[in-house]
Amino acid sequence: MFDSFTLVAATADLADERAARGVADLVEFRMDLATAPAEQLAGYDGELPLLVTNRPAWEGGEADGGDAAAETARLNTLAAALDYEAVEAVDIELAALRRSDRAVGVAETAERHGVDVVVSVHDFAGTPSERAMVSLLSAAASAGDVGKLAVTAADRADALALLSATHTVDAAGERVATMAMGAAGRHTRAVAPVYGSKIGYAPVHAEDATAPGQYDLETLASLVDRLRSR
Ligand SMILES: O=C1C[C@@](O)(C(=O)O)C[C@@H](O)[C@@H]1O
Image: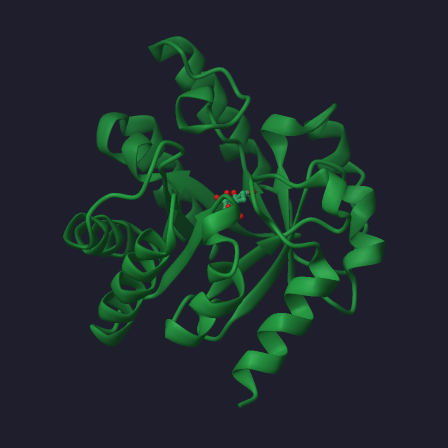
């Protein structure tokens, strides 16, 4: 997976899979935003494979990861999801891998199960320097199967720096996924795949966005298709 561009329908409700089918390649299940995530996973009978994410509050999500015990519980919930056949990828934050043995353990379990690991970095405050982004993306990519970087762009220069960092790390042979959140970065969701980004995230319905600036799924699918077929 992720050798070529993968369109991901991001959702807290696995019932969205039906609407995503035929458009998305994969469903990202945001366990941290979901009601009864374990029950939803157990009852999942959709056709699209799943990428599971249990984002902690310290990285912009809603799962409690506030102290060591809460962080271990969050990672255990994520690890339990790996037992489901439908789960083909898992998102683990680079910062979690750096600070917790349990996170490294989840990545190792994923590898044993043949589940791809997306190692993610999010900056909800701004866009780091291009150099810093290259270094973060390279570190994330070498810690898993794909390195993902989502930043917040304030202006065109930020968006351009993200695209340039994407190009640099992709050209070095690493698998990357990038996007700039917010209005100034919105177009990067359509354009970054041209520069090597391997994953695009979009909600089935615009009102269910899981991050600022996302296009709805149909829109992102059509923008990416049209740009990449040139
Ligand atoms: O990390 C990402 C990327 C994302 O934050 C975005 O900006 O599209 C959306 C999240 O659901 C996903 O886990």
